[in-house]
Image 1 (cartoon, rainbow, N blue to C red):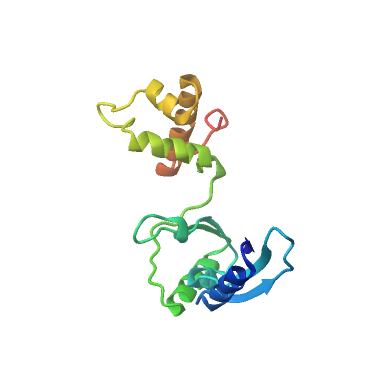
Image 2 (image 1 turned 45 degrees about the horizontal axis):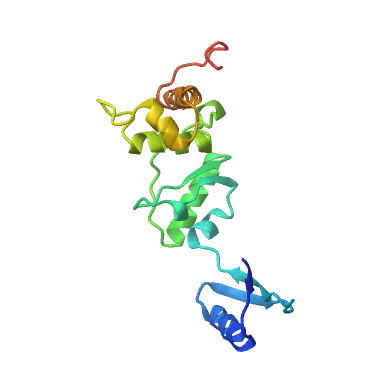
Length: 177
C-alpha cells in the first residue's frame, strides 16, 4: 500500500509510529518528505485466504473480502482439479472452513460483464423481475442512466448468459450471437 502523510512533523512521526505498530503491517518504508507530505510504502501481511491460494494457479473472479454475504462467497478460475484440491487443503491448514458449492466449466459466453451484473442487481433490487413489476423498464433505465432500448438489450443479453449457465443446451452458431 502506498500512502502519503501530511501535517506537522511531530504528527507525521506519530502517525508513522502508529502504522508500524498495527498487527497486519509487516514493514514500513519511509520516503523523503517532498513538501506535500511523507510518502510511505506499507507492506501488509496477506490474508490467510490469499496465502492458501498462492501456491495454486488460480484467478480470482470475486474476492471473499469484498463480499457482503456471510459466509463469504469466493469465485475463482482454477486450471486443474488438483489446483482446487490444493486450495481446499491449504484453506484447512489456515483454519478456514470452506465447502465447494459449485464447479462448472468456464464459458466466457455465459459470464456476465461487470455492467450486466450491476444492472441485473439493480433490476432485482428494484423489483423489475417481480410479478407484478415494481419498476418499469423506463423507470429502471432512468435509474441506471441508459436509454430504455439500450437497457432492454443489456437485460436480454444478461438473461441469455444466465440461461446458458442454468441449462446445459449446446450453443449453435445462430444462438451464440
